[in-house]
Length: 471
Image (tube, rainbow, N blue to C red):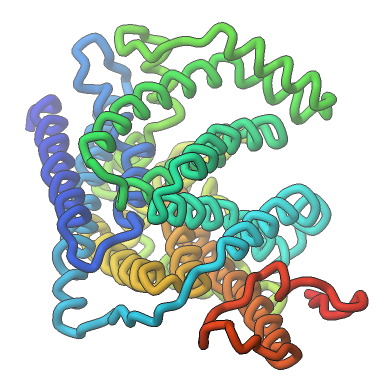
């Protein structure tokens, strides 16, 4: 098939799947918290933009044949995911009647969301620097940082439901601080940007009118790519300041210097296209694996890495000699023949990992299963949200976010989701335990309505220096 036709057909498949997914998310009766859309957006960041630029007649590199193969494989992945998420999941919900939303009359306490924010900030600034490299504990602490996204999402949700526009604007205006925080402390733009993407996608599921969402999405993509090319232009200087241990004042000045010379994305600019190709294009690696294995230069994994992803769920605290390690460089080299530099970080990505196991069949089945799984988790989360059960929402939403590791290995996805679930259960268990103590040790006033939930500042207030939980 002509390469340009292959790209166009793949682009058509992307468009059909994307429109079907968005339609299903907007028309669902139960509602959604946007996990399916978040997954596809992550897939698009890693694959769609990198394939799209090869349709530009003025951009072509020697990698083009592999990129075209990878773009086609990713299109199959998206179609399978959409089938599972947008068609099969609603069918399962309709046939089983799960989840049921019960009108409990429970009122959500905004202090719970703020405590989630506090847990995230303490994890990020205090605990992760001290204990982040310890097996198991480090994974739990990194999951604790994800509570920042949960807390902001819940505060924005409540402000919108109560039509408190000033609060809505306040919490929404804090979002640009997230990539600033991750850049100035770690030198990475992506972590903070993904956090914004998650919160904004969550907000788009309930915000009306929807044409505002569409306009904001178009402007957001344009602005986001502009920030990306500006940051990448000076990334080495920024990281030299951050990783070199420069004072925060010097790091801030470096960022001011970078963004005072802000560049708008220009698809006629070869440097901008090269930056997208080099950092936002996993199609090349996928295509290289397709070419390598389909021509008999290597053996398929036949489920080995998929099995290892389940074994990776066993904590290292229980299995100290567990063979699974984070990172994908060895797998990528083994199944593409490409040798990378010693300090080069390479993610295998879910599309490539399913392919190296069972070819295109592995991609279709794997992404179909992920689509159904994320769809069911999404339905559980939205049901808890509508019941104002914010703790239940976190128990669904946090592991759901862990499944969005599109650019990493399946083992990284399962361990992230597993750590997120354990962390959510631990945190909520502590809060529920404190709630039971408070109910046992206090007498409900006669004028207090039956079943009313007490405010969390009172629930968590230390009594005589006791009552703190030692994790």
